[in-house]
Length: 227
Image 1: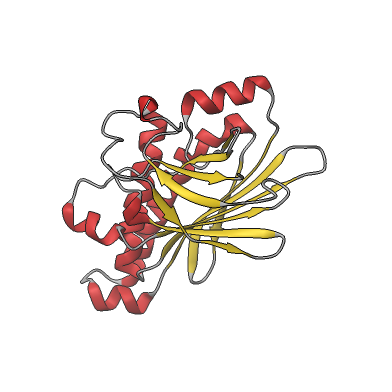
Image 2: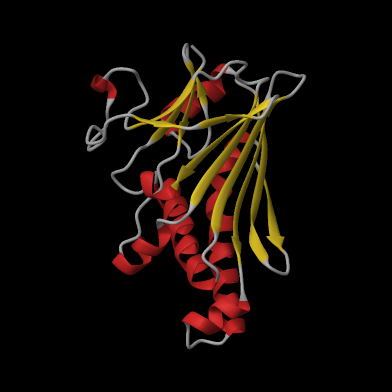
């Protein structure tokens, strides 16, 4: 649980700083099914950095701000070790105008793995249900109000192969993992289910969710219904 909270805080801290730097923070998540039956996940947590943006909005020089961003990315890299239990491998992304962390993992749904997924609700690690797929997506809020307001412009983008879910009828944000409110956690019943647009790309689906829907008391799960 502590690792998960540190992970969430790191995401939002970097998100807030990213908006100071350039106004662009994204979580990109790609899921496909391998021939051996495992699901491959590629998750990119990244920000676009801009020296011009730093100069415009801060008294601190661009290099100092970029150094601060590198330090926060280092913290995030450490916190993403939560994915190692699922075989996750992390790679630091350091490009001229982009900085981030790339997580790649192949999840085989053995009984042990399924039990761990259900027990921990690790961010962005899906569970399969009779109706489709449920993905934990909530992001921890930032305590500073100014930083909190800046973090609301982020976006979670999911591309999922039809090898994982052949027919996607609808995508819904909910506060609880199950169908019945009986399963809701503390504070999770405040928001009615929210339907998210789904774009059919032929052999994949694209779902985009703004961060402001996922912050603090917002929606905790993205449910993909196959029927």
